Length: 391
Image 1 (cartoon, helix red, strand yellow):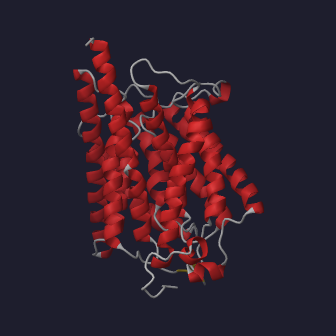
Image 2 (cartoon, helix red, strand yellow):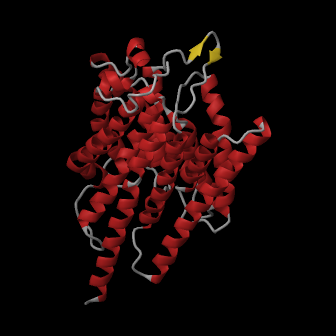
């Protein structure tokens, strides 16, 4: 066997394996969100996550990939593996959004938006950052470094969520008489399971984005990338636990897990370029940002049941800028420009698309439907039919 053929086979297998790890993030998002919402909305959340994966992936395969990358070719890897790997990313942008609007969003209009995100919005963001440069030039000449999508994926989903929150609004009774109604998670074991599935999936997310493992140098780089990814998650969890105990003398497992996820988002921009200690600091700052951002968004009456804005938008921005701070060869100005341009593009286009869809098919379920639960109104199947519904 020729050495080039052997490397081709190894890198193809590596890409497929990384893609498989990323797909584990689909049940990760589903379990995390199912545990954080009330029992009367669990089937709707699970259905939404499955529909997003199916619709976004197919929209990207049929239309989005060509817009993002220009052509179907690969000299070092099977093109089918490359397409599947890239296709595994696209649904995450809408998963981030769907979690933040759960318990009051209707499935049909969200599915329509998913088609547009998978076919047009996300591929356009990819094109001006990772892709074929068809949309680049002039003001859109972005030289931002973003290994696996702190901005391209996580902030993109966060900006779309922010636009959706302005249109859809908060859950019934969440903010009344100047007070915030606390709505506790329904199933903490599911939250833990979902968070750890996401954590494991991140090894494919970041490690797979290195692109090759068929040489000694690349194998070391993949290993370092995965180690740095894990390290940032560890420090994010620890700092969230410390801050929560210092403030409330309690360990909030949901905040600890979101702190870990915040660290993972933050390191995603340049996990391959940091030494083995810098991710500790990046994760510490990321986890702390989550703890302080969650109550801030509540004060702004941006009702986000899963903390997606704090985890993905805030830390997507922080992680992208951190690459320009801690990696000498990366320009901080280029990172900042990328964050701003992609933020403006994604938020404005998402808002317009959501606004238009909402005119024909309302995203927000009415108060009666929310009171009865989205399971009955959207799915006809209750996840926990023997339980008394929480109002």
